[in-house]
Structures are given as structure tokens and as C-alpha cells.
Amino acid sequence: MVFAHLQVSQSVRLQGACRVWGQPVALEGLRLDDGELLVIIAPPHEENLIADYALRWGIETLYGIFKT
Image 1: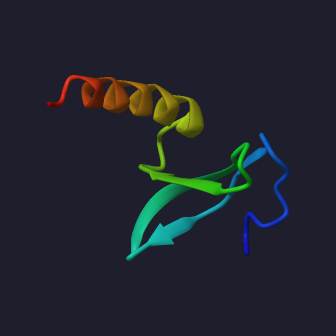
Image 2: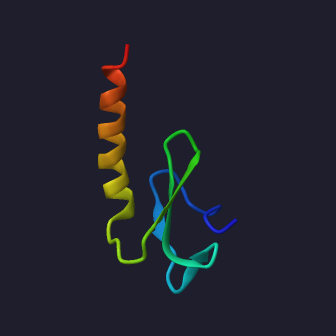
């Protein structure tokens, strides 16, 4: 519900204290091109959640190419 208003390619990072299972976290959502919602949860000191995740995803999918 928090990110339901997002349009395609639009993202928002929640401000203030966010907690998951009692731990402080940063929380950011992005509406993908197919309409799905991507939600990133990371340590609160992280700055560029979506950009960092995109880099990581690129690396993870690259390794998938080499699996036999």
C-alpha cells in the first residue's frame, strides 16, 4: 500500500524510522516497466538503494549465463 501510487519508472524512499523485525532499515520502492513493484530493504546508512541493486542484479544474471 505504501508504494501503490508509483507510476512506471518512479521510485520513492521512505523517510524516517523504518523497522523490519525490530531492525532499522532503509526502504525504497520502484515501479517497473511491466507494472510490478520492486521493493529494496537495506541497512539504513545505504544511499543509492535502487542503483546499487541494479548493479548487483546485473552481476547475478551474468553468472547465470555461465551455468550449465
